[in-house]
Length: 387
Figure 1: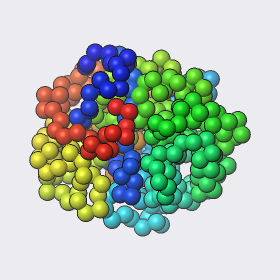
Figure 2: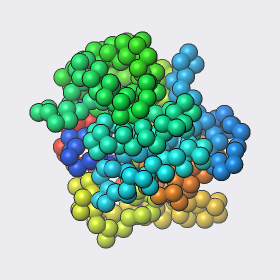
Figure 3: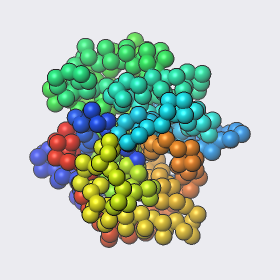
C-alpha cells in the first residue's frame, strides 16, 4: 500500500487506474474521494449485529454507519436500484422491479439506494412505490447535486437542495430521507453551505442523516465540522482500492461509515462480461477505458483468480468481492446493484462468509500480481471527481 497521501494537494494525487454506471443523459456524473494513512485493520469477530432469521430471510447481519451519538443501523449489504432504470441497455419492466425490491426486503435487506438523477426521477418513484407498504421497516438513501435540465453540470446551492429534497420526498412517498448524499462535490458552492443546508433539513425532520459521495478527505472534514457526516459513498472494489489510501483513516477517525458502490466493478468481477460483450449499445460502460475489449481480455484474469480462490470455499466471484470488504473493514456496507433475483440472493449470501486475514492477503496478492488494465473513467468523468 502506498504511503500516506492525505495531505497532498489535489493536483498531486495520482489518477486512479483502477455492477454500476450512470445514465446516458447524465454524462456529467463522476466519482472520487480522499483520506489518509494505509489501513490494515481487519474486522474482527462477527460482521456485525444479527437479527432473528425469519422465513425466507437470507441476510441477517447488520452494520452501523456513523457515530454512536447518531447511528444509522442497516443491513450489512445495501441494494442499489440505479441499474433498474439507468446505464445498462434494455431495462426490466416496472412491475418486475417493484417485486425485486420487495423480494430483497423479504430476504433481509433493509437499506435501498436511489437518486433523483437516476432516470431521471423515475427511479425514486419506483423505490417509493415498492417500499411504501413497509416504509417504517427500511432505510432509504437518495442524492442531490446535479443541474438536471439546467445549463450547469452541478447545482448544490442551498435553494436547489431544499427544492430537490421536497421533490424527492414526494417521489419516495415518505416524510423523511434516512440518508441524504451530495451526489458529487460542487466546486462552485462551499461545502460548508451544503452541510449547513442539510443540517437545517435535519432539524426540520425531512432528513435523518447526511452523506457525501466521492469526496476527498479535506472536503469530508470541512463538511463534518458543520453537520456530522454519517457515511461517504464512493466506488470501491478489488479493481479500485484508492479509497483505502485517501479516505479510510479519516473515516475511522471521525466515525463515518463507508458505502461501497460498484463493489463488483460494474459487473465485471461477477463474471458476466467478456471481451465480446456489447457495451456500446445504450451501455455507459462502453465509453470507459477499463471496459474496452483489450482491457477486458486482461482484466478477466482477475475473475479467473477469484473463481480459483472460491472453488474450495464454495464462493462465487461476486461473493468473494463482497465478503472481502465486509471481512476487512467493520465500517463498510457494500452496495451491489442487480435486476435479477438470482444475483440478489447470491449477493446477500455473501455476508455469511468471513475471510481470515490470511485469506484476504492471499487474494489481494494474487490480484495485485495480475494488475488492472484501464482507468475507471474517461477524462471527462475523471475531471468531475475529487480523486
